[in-house]
Each structure stands twice: as structure tokens, then as C-alpha cells.
Length: 612
Ligand code: G6P
Image 1 (cartoon, helix red, strand yellow):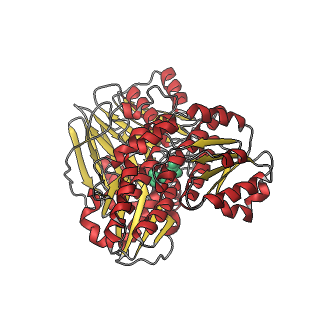
Image 2: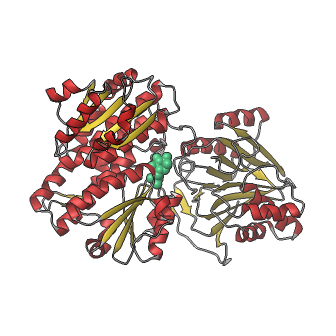
Image 3: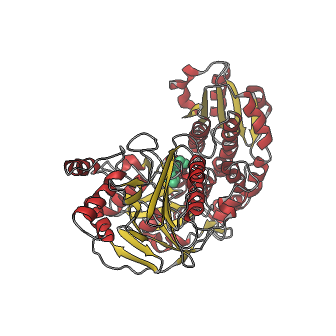
């Protein structure tokens, strides 16, 4: 979603800000803008479309300056347009602001400001903040910093903002509530951004602004304050654990392909140091202090959005089977607004790649309020969900830049499998069964590399399905959520309509869609569901559907029933979902590329959804 970058220092801010915006492109956006200060002048350029369109304008104008702010916008209030793009400037032309998040009371504030003669130039909620700051600064005579602070006390909603004022040319003010901001502390220069990716090239020293905090930056240093209490907050500088290679594509044409291929080692990174082969168990350091409460839980809720929710569904199968604890899996956006049965023996697990998804964060806060133990499974270290949960497990998949989640999903499955194994062993799983699972996890990366070798073969298959409008994905048991995830991947990046279904449920609806044009992807492991799934495939076959199978063993039966088969070498029944999703990621990727889609930044999607 929206991206923020700001710079104050000796260098020319423009190339730093433009490069920063490019680093933030992965978050998803539809317009971009920049404001820079030079010799007491503030120049603002805003463009609908890609950062490169903005860059061309900025170059034509020969823009430069030693301080500036820049933004990529993902439209919420008002269509994507030059006017609605950030930065927004107050009506005196003195103050510029960039904003991530949503101001919920913007309409009331807008009416109030209009009554006082303020003219608005955009349809956004964000412009309200800068006009409010302006009123407090120009009309009420507050200092620039105090005006920002006072304005933030009036707004309701979520924000990460950076503001600058022409009459205070050496000062940048940033503040956060519900929308992350990172301050980069360089040698005589400062960076502020919505995540560390625009900063890592210049410094590793960073500070994460906390909820309700603001930072006032000038060339001599910075001061962090609590917005409401007006007290100074002292914070330790931390080192970001991120390398440039991790956030660049390298030899790959797209981040998504790079990340699919990285799964050969990311799954191992997730498992590293955590599997206990001898004990047939796993050790998850981040939840160690809460094990008694977890072991004695009456029920688990798993709450998440998108791909992470699919991981949760698989987690339910694993946890109920191994640990014998009831598990409910809910979209965070639903969970947060309903009366779930939660007590002090309930454990609420939030799964989130980014750790910033607004609904998931709100779900966790609600769960904490009613006394549940909260546990996070997050990829981004230090993210809001990771910090706000009582305990948690990091997935350690490294930064995921492609909007469509791939390596984060398999890492989440690896964590959930270890969690189920550990809890299973604490409750009823035998050591021998535990050892089999633990051993199989250590064999995963070999299987992943075999699947990745089939990428070209999958590309060939994709060529045969280029002209279709609909896909159906089927699976049973543990593999039903994999069908959902395969369908989600395809629609996200290729814009082909796709649905995932439990295989047997097909005959209660989707079967009506099947004809000789319709491809059906079926997950068919040789487990206890095999015979049943085989019957479902027969049902598709007899209606002339085109069949693509993902299986762990190619048999004559399966060959005769299908148009294409992809084999996944699978060490254990429960690792099949983790492996079988990879060919589905590749299929979606190749289809999207062949259809000329923007794989890494699909239309309308955002990587990190920080609004409701
Ligand atoms: C967005 C992304 C998805 C992701 C979902 C949840 O929709 O495009 O890829 O699965 O958010 O994100 P999270 O960071 O909470 O896992």
C-alpha cells in the first residue's frame, strides 16, 4: 500500500527520494509525488501512474533540493489522479504533507475547515491534515511543530505522516499511529520511510517510531516525542538486518520468480535450529515462556488475511490432527467485528507476512482486550503484529517484494508444521511419529529443488491455457487450502478468474461450469483421500474438462485421466501442501508473464494492506 520516503541532509534529495520510491513500488500504488525544498522554495510534482513517469517530469524540471518528501499512493478516498496524489499542500502553499493510512473523521474536519474558508484541491482524506496544520500554524499562531502535534490530536484514524514547511526549511516532522515509520540515522543525514527498503543503501542504523510518537528532525539531530503527552521518548538505535541483494531482483526477470526460486533455501532457513530429530519435536524459542498456557488452551483461533489465511486453514488440519485442540480459522476482518467465544484459555494466533495488515492487527488487539493469549507468526522482524502479540515465531523467509506471496506462505506452513509437531509431542503424538515428521522436514529443500527444475515444463503447460477465462482448483483435506491458494495466485497476477474448492464439493455448483475449455487443477497425493479424489477427477473427465494434476506418484490411472501431470517428490503426507503449492505458483507466474501482466505489481493490489 502507500509508501513514504523523506530525506534531510547535505546531498541532493531528489535522486534519493526517487530511488526510494522505486524501492517502495512493490507495496502497490497508482500515483506518485515529490516535494523538495531549495533556497526557501518548495517545489511539488505529482503524477498519476508509475514512478518513472514522475521521474521524467522531475528530470525535465531539473528539480533538486537538500530536503524533501515523496510518496506512492494507493487510492482510498478519491480516484488515482495527479491532484489526489501526495504530497498535499495547504492553501497558503507553505506546508506539504505525505500520509499513509486513513483519517476516519476527515469529513467532519473538512466541513469545519471549509466553513472557515479553506479551499480543498483534492478528494483525499489526507489533505484535511495539512489544511488543519495550516490553520493552526497560520491562524492560531502555533509553531510548525506544535501545529502538527495539535492537528494530530484532532484526527481519528490511522496515519504515518511526514510534513515540511517553507518557513522552517531545515525541519522535517514525522508521526505515526497505526502506520509504520522507520527513521534512518546516517552520517549528518536522516531518512524517514514506511519500511527500511529505501534506507538500507545509505545506513543500517534505524529507529522504529512507536504508536503515537512523532519525530522532529533537523541537521543537528532528532527528537522523538509522545504526541499526546508531549514527553521526550528515548530509543535505542537498532541495526537493520537487510541487504541490498535481498531487495533487488538480481538475474531474475521478476521478484516473484526470484522468491519462488528462493524457496529452495528459505524453508530451510525457517526450520534452521528448530527441529529436534531425536525427540521427534521442534523448539520454537519465541513461545517458550508461554508453553504451559498454549498446551492447556481450550481452543485456538487463527486469524489472518489473504494467503496467510490459507496457511491458517492448513494449520487447522495440522493442529487438530496432532495436538487435538479445536482450531477456528477466521478472516481477521470478520473476527475483529464479531463476538467470538474467547476466554483466558483461548490462544489467538495471527499469521501475517508483513506484520502490518490493519485487520489482523486489530484482531489481535481485540483478542488481547478480552484476555486471550496472542501469538504472532510474522515474517517482518519488529513489525507491529510481532511487537504487539504476547509471543511469536518469525518465519525468517527474508524480504518478500512480489505482491503475490510465495516464499512467505511456505515459510508459514513450515512454522505451523513445527508448531503442530511440538504441541503434538507435548500432548499425544508418539516419538516415532514425531521423528518421521521431523525427518521429513529436513528433506524438503531437496524436493523443492526438483520442483523448481520443472519450471520450463510448467511454462509449456501454461502456453496451452493462455486463452482461458476460468480455472477451477480442487483438493481435499490438507490440500483443499492449497487449491484456494493456487486459485488466488492465478487471479492475483494473471487476472484469470479462478476458484478453489474442496474436490467433492464441486458437484454442488462448479460442475455446472465444466466444459471442454475449462481447466481443472487437481491436487492428488496418494494419501487417504486418493480414491475419493480419483472419483472427482472422473466426474470432471466425463464432462470433458481439461485436467492438470499435481501428485506425488505418477501412475497409469492418473496418466489416463489427465492432460498434464506434475510430480512432487514428497517425504511425508503432511508436507504435500507445502510442496504442491510451488508448481501452482509457477503456473500462475508463467501464465501471467505470457499474458503480458505486471507480475510484481498487479493492478489494484497492495503488498501490505494497512487500511481496513
Ligand atoms: C495483501 C497481499 C497478500 C497477503 C495479504 C495478507 O492482500 O497482497 O499477498 O497475503 O495482504 O498480508 P499479510 O502481510 O498480513 O500476510
